[in-house]
Length: 105
Image (tube, rainbow, N blue to C red; front, top):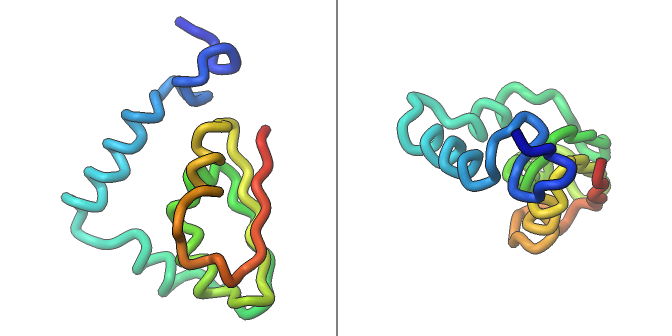
């Protein structure tokens, strides 16, 4: 088994980035509820709050977080995959109005 720290195609829990994308897409396609809608309804963050997203991946929940915390809020995303963090920084998600920071680790 390859070490996740030396193989950039593996995440720490031994799931390839492509497999993770497939799993996320399958949830969106086949689940009986939208995780984004559930988060939107149940997160109690407010305008100006700070969110620490550990294991943020490509930032797929940043738009939800951004809507909750507004322009004064801050999102700090941490992930062990540089590739996924790069995707998060390049994506066109709705949190462009919020501050955000990406950390590798």
